[in-house]
Image (cartoon, rainbow, N blue to C red; front, side):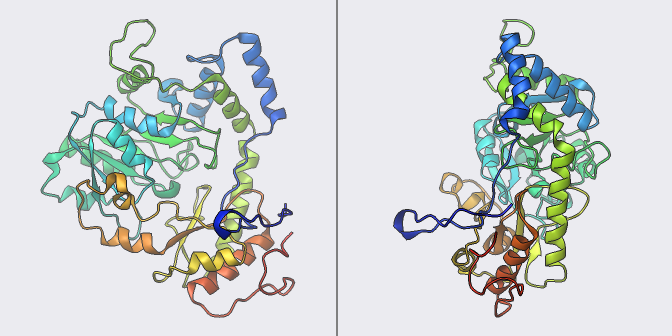
Length: 400
């Protein structure tokens, strides 16, 4: 599918990119309609309806869990906050977490009444290093550890379970983009620590807004379900001081339609991933994020430049290519969290200064991918732009 629309002139002289960095695609109305008709017939629109129950069961099967091993929420940020609360962490305690993550993680920690404490990441994995954390002298100050699977890349859950068992500190795993990596038989196994997956529209498996909590601990998951439903569970008695984080039947309808199409959807993500991997193969200047093109798929592609190139995104924009620094400069650089305690963050600072997200969406063409990689090489400092011979020089608008 090509991009037929012309550039749009926006406020202050900015130009909309011809190739956007993301273009979410959910099931069309025809695929969702049968489920909407079920809602009409059931007259059940929220509060753990029949579609919600079916989606929860089907997702549990996808992840190789018992039907009650998944809890669905309105979004993943609420799920993270409720997971911390369900773990019984005393409000006011510190939560050790990476600064290199989406700001929603820090917001969830605050929502749970905890204080984010930002730690640095391993340069090879872009994630917290359990061995480095184990050697810390201040673990007694930590009420919880929030581990992030960066951009859906699998992490070693068994190692984090061992650290939690050794220290007594609850571990929560934020795996927003790891819907596929967590699949039954996939590269990321669910351990004892609960895992939170995002079902946002920007994810490979997206329903618009939604979250899923995976756990092998039925008692813990029951506590989280109570917290997501005003403290109720099977009665009108608020046993806990909960909130309203339930997924609606309408979101569940989109989720069921999305699951119906998942084999085809996954195949298109795989094809795009393979083409990008081939286009970037052997490139010394554009390094994809850890684990890219391995046995899992996600909906973003971040690459790191060899050095800080503040003009790189502008150069790509001039050629009609949208980019995004998905995690910005890290949570510690966001004004809302600038006062949070943190360790020295040299790896985070280095990666944040060099990482940019390239266009990555299901309907992209091979020609677009080749063009983007060619322009990105020039932006990274490799020299003159090397376009495929069938493309006119200096313009992305020839793509179709």
